Image 1 (cartoon, one colour):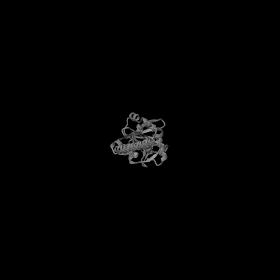
Image 2 (cartoon, helix red, strand yellow):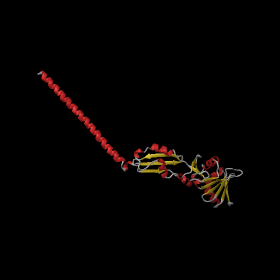
Image 3 (cartoon, helix red, strand yellow):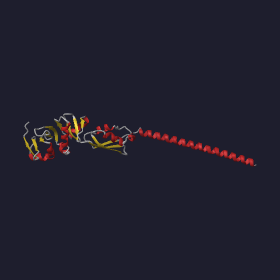
Image 4 (cartoon, one colour):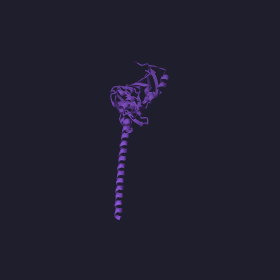
Length: 254
């Protein structure tokens, strides 16, 4: 009887082991089935997302640019509206844009609405060196004139008669002391050296008047509207006296 009882215990143990192994195989199957289903659903979901308009860039909002157009900024960013929004890296985009010599700084933000917000700060364009076909930045840097810089004409005067960078640098240093509104009143600056001042200039204003001055009194252009009203003159030649820091006018010779 003892032998029969031992055989029954062994049979029970074998049966229990088989049941446990079967349960383990079932558990592994369920895990594999779950992973397969999860992968399938995820793949379908990702495919649907990335092939739908929801994954693309909905808008690129650009501000702060004066010289560059929005299209020029967009071109330099390398962004296309059919790009995946999730593939856009704000830090990389900023680094790419600030490499442009006309751009001083950029702030890039990505919104939950799949929008890219780009805030641009451009370097100041002080003048356009007409003899060389270059724009001159406030720090004296020179950039070859190109189509994308065309709007610089709206904010910066053309300078003429300058043959070397040294004399341009001296002029730019003086012009940088003017406010944007005062500089905007200036249309052209011509080098007009005299026997006593090689940096003397003739300035053609937007209103047609001519101003003759040395660089030391160039800051008097800040008072130009008041000076014109006081002199009560139009299309005349106005002289800034460096000794007395006063202005007077007389008919132009030609």
